[in-house]
Image (cartoon, rainbow, N blue to C red; front, side):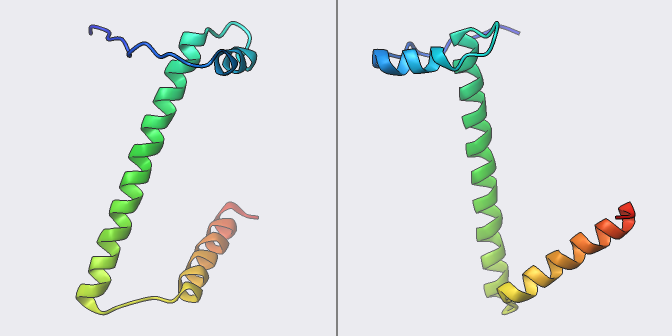
Length: 90
């Protein structure tokens, strides 16, 4: 697979120094920037999927007229956690 490059990025010297100041042993600035871009891509995809699920849920609630209170949802989640703990023997 061929590789591609990201566009050059001009930043304030302070930002570059700050980025260099947090590099881990053996990490290059290029690797740091690549990891930061990957993390943001993942975050934004996850965020978009979350919003899409929320909007779909809203539309389903509008369509069916079935709504749940926050208390009902939290109780359901607490029951799931309790069941998982029992299963693990905790």
